[in-house]
Length: 294
Ligand code: NAD
Image (cartoon, rainbow, N blue to C red; front, side):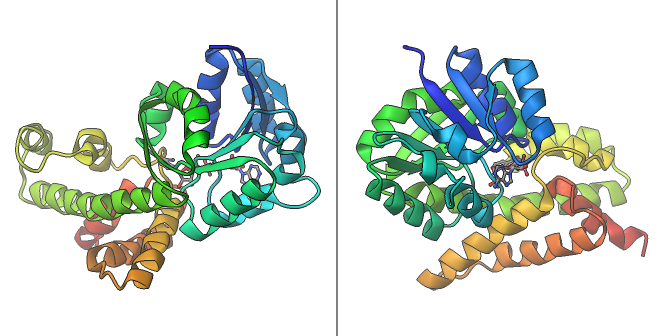
């Protein structure tokens, strides 16, 4: 694989290790984040280049990667004199790993096409652990030629990267994923609370359930921390609320009912009121447990 010049914008819980994998594979990586100290820390650790704006990062890059919180941050990074489009090269591909709306994905894809560049919506699943281990599942939407160009590099931090259709197909698949997982985490909180309230040895209960029909990624990776009341990591509750809002909006347009997804969204608002803004969203467990203190 020849050495390429990449840009990576958004060095958060996910982006920081993902950009690191591109560097470890020997590519030139220029990074930008609104938090300068994060950029400095990344460059000190990985030895890439720091940019002072999205435009400067994108200039000269064959592929621009983004991993930002949501639609608004994407548009801020995209447009204006210092935005990505001001630096995006003809023939380059922008790979966006943000979990965002279909509307913004298609808007950015159209703007990139008008500039002679490509755009892929490529949201991820697998958590911070997946980003650190290079084992993410990545759902890709966009044109064939952009996928062919970018996939070998996306695979540097993915165990599975799948092209699911045209622009927006990656985001719609991620929404299906989130719809499937939200009720599951709430059910896990209820099951653990039930077992604990019954005076069972919950660690033993979990080890049995992991071999039974209720086993899941959530149970394997989150049951222990939920039990311990540890949430200072992972996927913050406001980000999951944002994902649920995206699902609700897309479902409304198709008249698809999502009663459980909607309810868990309300539960997460309760968690935030309890002080859980920065907690991993498995803190649904704290809301569930609160009946015991009340
Ligand atoms: P995060 O909040 O930790 O990171 C986002 C980064 O973007 C921050 O470093 C922030 O400073 C930076 N940023 C914000 N606006 C910017 C701008 N205009 N220009 C440049 N940088 C800007 O979020 P995260 O947990 O890394 O998640 C990133 C995306 O991945 C989100 O869309 C999230 O829904 C999705 N995701 C997260 C997880 C997870 O477990 N954390 C899992 C799957 C998907």
